Length: 396
Image (cartoon, rainbow, N blue to C red):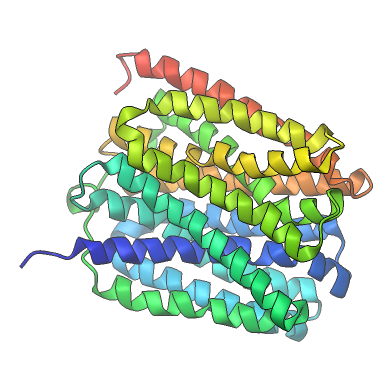
């Protein structure tokens, strides 16, 4: 009997949408937490930091236990944790000694689920017998973008109808999707990228120069993406003067749309495009966007920089994974886990740096964005090194 790998793809699509819910719903509430719970912006930045640090820890652990426990069990656990964390977000801030404690506990729980699916989604799809793997991988990661768009749009509509104070009901509603996706992961066919689920060890991977450059690239890609994405809502409100609804639509929503467009373009035309050149051009555009968002006094130029930044970072994460998958086909789970870990390291460090610089600069988000320019700059240098390694025939 032939296996229905389209169901596997659907489960991974919904898994990445779940990850988008976990990563993007709470940032929409940053200013609400700041105003209602009187939490300083510097401590608000801790929410994003702990979210990505938790994912980072899960990434490292996945490189060791995912093959032993099995992809299916880990994927089901990811959906359970995501749902539990989202539901906890609605109740724990009022039950814990301080609201920030309850928020952090909930964030850590759903970050565990988000981290698991982040690591497992790529190898599960990579192991399926699809043609044009780079295109399939890019389209898979685009569902994170479309999930982000859906979260922002639907949340904005919900807040407009029922008010921002009803956010706890919406947190519970978002938990329905991962609960439903448990069935998909429990019943879909799941394969491994290497025989018996055994790939290269961490030690072997770390002896490959290309892999080290990819690690740096992923750190910068994660920082470049999340420093803008996590603060886009607050940036468009406080720095550009937009209302809450317009800020969410014009900032994080458009950011996610342009990021998704970038991934769909490469997913459709990837065979005709040079991946490294596409990534290099995206890196230059990313640096330009950060400069525009940080130094321009014109709110329209700042908004354009914020929006186009999504397009510029879209290919970085899936592109790096595709390069490593093609050059290191025996990388296995450890390779995907360590790459995800590097991306999450950037995602933890970048928004935190922007938030703390902003607080020290009198809550001026433009100053925080200016410091964020370092991430796309190092990203461009990493791509130049990656081109050199590509030409080096000694690298496997």
